[in-house]
Image 1 (spheres, helix red, strand yellow):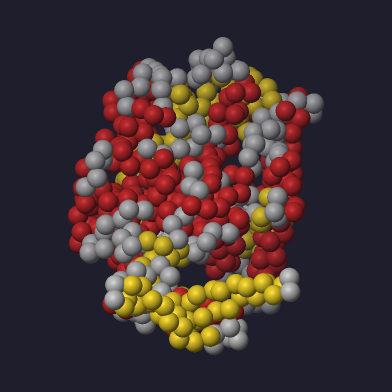
Image 2 (cartoon, rainbow, N blue to C red):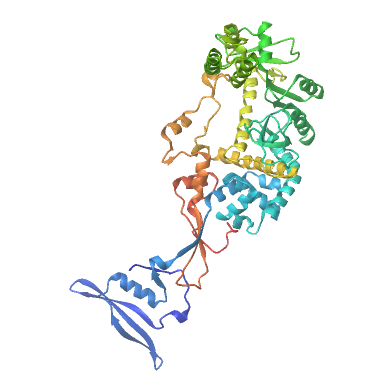
Length: 601
């Protein structure tokens, strides 16, 4: 049998074998050294210390001799399989990593300068939203599988306490957003703004209404929210609206926020083409201080072509040109042509045309077979087809009683093909401040806030579905997810070299901002080899899962029940050490054994 000494256990003197010990007697005989192991007893006789040899154990294996030596010193030995039991195991590494970034980003100080029970709950909810996004009830149950409750001091928190903290957070939202704006925005900054929506489960919340459903959830009410970010994509502010609110109707609130709440006199606002109207632009001109950059709709581009302002042949050698039009006084129009976008749109149109013709052929066969006779019924069948693929503008139809035929409208198709790959940017920023190349870069920066909305709605933070009944709780839920994205943004930036993310983005093919961005050599190398040096490349989610395998195990010694339970932590592997090192955490110095208290960590 193998035995394990509990040498760190401080035994009392009563458990020691008084006076007994192993003596090592070394002698040399014929030039060779011999060692004799004797069990001896020390005792006093007449005030004199005497020794008595009890046994000679030299013939025993050296391992047995050492065990006897330790036993006589008072050590306790038990079989290896009984030496220690793990009574509880919880994930720990990913909690430490996310909490570290939450503190390093400064967000926690913005929420509340001093620790309180409510701030601790909000901090725990932000960490949980990044690690395991789910309902608040499920979160309250899940986080006990990690060390989060002990570290944050929320072991006894229930769902009612969570809702109370969320209600408190709504009251702090304006102050937190002002602090974020002070840090990331200044006069002259580029501000990114976009709108999205998420479906709602239930019908109790006053914000839940039917509207344009981006989630393709038929029959579901929804909540609309607008996200404002700085030029790098860091979220600064979020505003919640009823589900039927149009994108244009949300813009005025953002202008008021920039002007009144954040105290910014001059900014450049980048918004999508569906977000701004001529009426709103006139309001911005009257207000002053708010420049904008957006894109024209397809109908407006066609109008410019008809008036001769845009001639596709001029872009055979160029992909970027600035024009002026009397329809847009005091504004600049930057015309761009992306050849890759043109090819993609041509391919997609051909696929939709072919798909439409396949469906139209089915109607032709039904009419020819006499199964579809009435003109109204033929029209109904036709409507279902053309509405499915949105290609009615490229076909001409002949419908009558028992008669149906169609043909492509080649002129319409050719006219649309001539404009494939074209888009026109519209801005009020003067040329001395933004050359035409910067106008393109400014508008393309919208992809960063769009990435934020995708992260909020996608698998990372999962803002949807929304279950809360009270309007304030819905606002708190969406704001909480936004704060979680703020922490995730900083984590991604810190871990770029470990992830598939490009560490040096921004370069474009031929140096043109119109063409797609090129991935750096480092990013291409990571994608092809699937490794960063010795370690595999991770996505953000899988890296968190990897860190989550650093476990906190609560152990005890069954053979010695007097010893209280203690914590032992999994030794980090190389990729875990590297990820923790990026956050300033020394993986080699993670605690190996701790008392029954995790709050000190």
